[in-house]
Amino acid sequence: MKTKSPYRKSCRISDGKIREIVRYFSLDLPAIKTTELTRLNPKTVDNWYGYIRKVLLWEMNRESDEMFS
Image 1: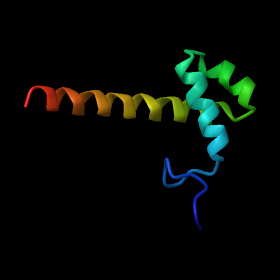
Image 2: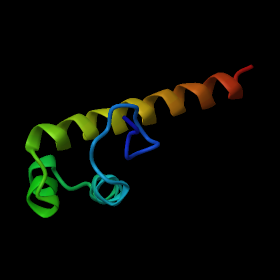
Image 3: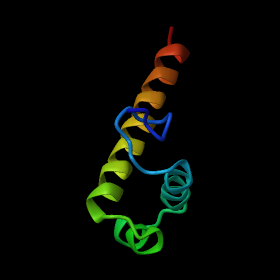
């Protein structure tokens, strides 16, 4: 089965919903408010917020390694 999103392998939500989650994350909205605005399951939004944090951390570590190399 082909996934709907290029962002994660086993993602079943649309790119539009993912963009909404990222936009609300960047506006510092809590996950519960994002859940209300996107009408997604709270667990889904929590998982995406955690995923975004991991990606940001990975990117920051990669940049700092390049800076000190």
